[in-house]
Length: 240
Image (cartoon, rainbow, N blue to C red):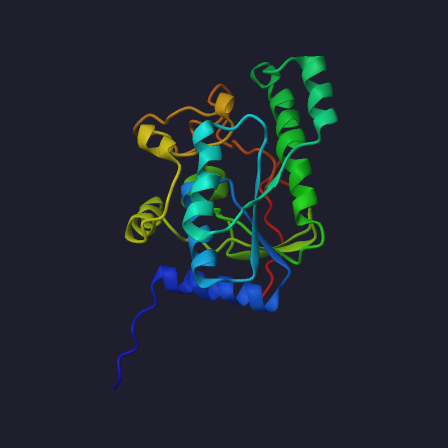
């Protein structure tokens, strides 16, 4: 009997991305330039798949995060598409509440995220049939039920989470095996990286996302990109 090699997680990832590109285009991948997202970026660009890659520059990112876009250009000869917040919306929010109002109240932090992240995301997903993310189940308590694929009614797109079953170690094994560039803040103790004023390194033993909005006393820390209007992490009808 011929032994069929067991498929690795990398094999499954590539097969999923290839299927999305072939059967659900136009497709786009939203990258926060995290370690997880660099895995998906490498898989898409190394295989030459017809999937757009975009990121959202909130205007408050770490310099190391912005620098990674240049590393992607050098490594893959690809320019990640950049979306930015509406300048008037940002200016009005800052004028009314101050530049760091997110520290004052959860509602102001969520409004800042809505302006700087959620609204640009809506523009990025407009006209797309499929949205690919780097969400993983073990990255936060709020994400333990993230499905491999679903229909996202918020944005009316098929949403694919091909790394849902990957562990943090799986991510780093892939990055090191393929010499994929990554955000150097990880070498300084960060495990989840967002805007500079809202992110700190994690303490050993903490939840991976504990360094995000650390001043908020809640275990469900989300920016709104993957959250329904009622505050729940989106978990809609799965789609084949």
